[in-house]
Amino acid sequence: MWKRYAAVLPANPWNWVAVWRRNYMAWKKAAIASILGNLAEPMTSLFGLGFGLGAMVGGVDGIPYVAFLAAGMVATSAMISATFETIHATFARMHAKRTWESALCTQLTLGDIILGELAWAASKALLAGTAMMLVAATIGYASWPSVLFALPVIALTGFAFASLAMIVTALAPSYDYFIFYQTLFLTPMLFLSGAVFPVTQLPDIFQQLSHLLPLAHSIELIRPAMLDRPGGSVGLHISALCIYAVVPFFLSVELLRRRLMC
Amino acid sequence: MQLLTRANVSSSPSRRPESNPFKQECHGHNNADNSLFRSKSDVAIELTNVSKSYGDKVVVDQLSFTIASGECFGLLGPNGAGKSTVSRLVLGMAPPDEGTITVLGEPVPARARLARSRIGVVPQFDTLDREFTARENLLVFGRYFGLRTRELEAAIPSLLEFARLESKADVPVAELSGGMKRRLTLACALINDPQLLILDEPTTGLDPHARHLIWERLRSLLARGKTILLTTHFMEEADRLCDRLCVIEHGRKIVEGRPHALIDEQIGCDVIEIYGGNPRELISVVGPYAQRVEVSGETLFCYASDPEQVRVQLRGQTGLRLLQRPPNLEDVFLRLTGREMKD
Ligand SMILES: Nc1ncnc2c1ncn2[C@@H]1O[C@H](COP(=O)(O)OP(=O)(O)OP(=O)(O)O)[C@@H](O)[C@H]1O
Ligand SMILES: [Mg+2]
Image (cartoon, rainbow over all chains, first blue to last red; front, side):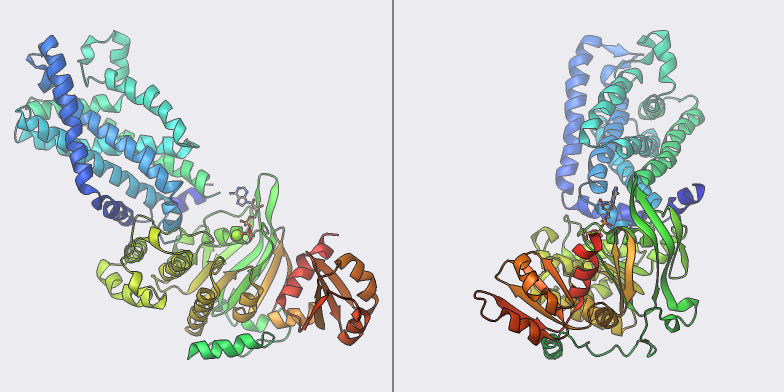
């Protein structure tokens, strides 16, 4: 059992790059549309929610609502982007398009392929998060240069959510099942993680719960970076995100081994 | 040039094409040809008592065979016999329930990755990347083997030429015909200059030209010393290419041997195919004069050492069409996996 698992783990630290490059090559063909989409999405959420709600709410914690929301939206867009890439595009490559099947005939292991897909989803999350941050920066809600600290956090956030979504991908018989993950996991997380309103508004039990949520940790890191404020417990938040990135990855390798290599 | 030799060969189906100069001369006359394997490194694939079940369905059942380096080994059997499953087991894409598999000296599945780095695969169903052109497919696939872009760019033109796809290099895969895709899949399988090729029905769905082209390509690969595990439903293909073959049914080995040894052993006399009448009625007419008769669809296969006798019996019957020919692998296949087996 353990031997079979060991045989499908990533073979070396660089094999995954080939899978990443395959996805990059395919993405390049529609890069313009993808980038425009990534820019349009923050416009709607920041301007729509930010200014609309902002006018009613006024300020949060002594800053304009849009400034508060911007960090939440950066983390959220990384979450959504990584998740959707994994449960839709990656699922298609694994399932209908048989891209993985051809890769499995080569010296790549299943672990290499999964790692490449996760790295790719994290890259797309970085793109989406950065686009959101650029829009926030142009309207003056991202402080330079502290905002640069947010970039690695966005990538890590993307990796963590891709990793979690990979478990869903491994277990889902078809696309229809992804809706459960969205409605039962992602949407509540959005409201419990301090993305659109401060966690302190929540009842105590939900505040406790939010300490377990990866999005909350991501926002705790990104918000101070964007507002150039001192952040607390940086080590804790980064460790939490790392756990969410690593543990589901190793679990998904086993789940996908059972699914594909039986 | 090669087209001419090919035409000669196909005109006499009962004769083997010229033997491969790279092969050892010791191909003996019996099936248990142990002299083939001079040492461990001469063994490309070895399966020992391998079994595999899905649920309670046994798909591969105590299967053992050994393939020597440089040999073309055919895996034949009816639909669902377990041929593709054997390929998956050999590639380490599925673990066996029982038994041991060694491929290119590596235990599989434990070290299958190392074996796969020296294997080229043509899967039964194309897995080409439809988002890319022919050239890009080769590039992406080559990178999966850890090859550098520069090396690949140098190798790709000759592979495209090998597959006669030079003019299609920049055409998206989605726009290629079935035969072109199959040739591109073969080119992809060669990107890592493999020692061993695992080909699962490489010519199914191809027109005769495309099929002959692939046969010629495979023959040139054998001449370069490659080992091939070939799954096919075309008996002519098996007869032309394979040094030895193995027929399986329900995952079990029925026979193994050299094509012509099998034809001699299993049939050993001329065949008269009779169609145009009711095969069941004809059995009673010709049965006593044939060693064996077999009905397949609307055709009566009559195996007779004295075919004249059979012809005499049918004289006067109108509307019948008779074809007398030497026995071939198809007869072996029908005999082994046909009605007789199941009764
Ligand atoms: N993943 C699987 N789960 C369950 N059953 C399977 C699986 N893969 C194969 N089988 C079953 O195993 C049997 C052998 O399948 P396999 O594809 O190996 O046959 P084959 O000899 O390649 O047939 P064909 O000539 O039609 O390609 C079939 O009955 C098939 O239904
Ligand atoms: Mg098959």
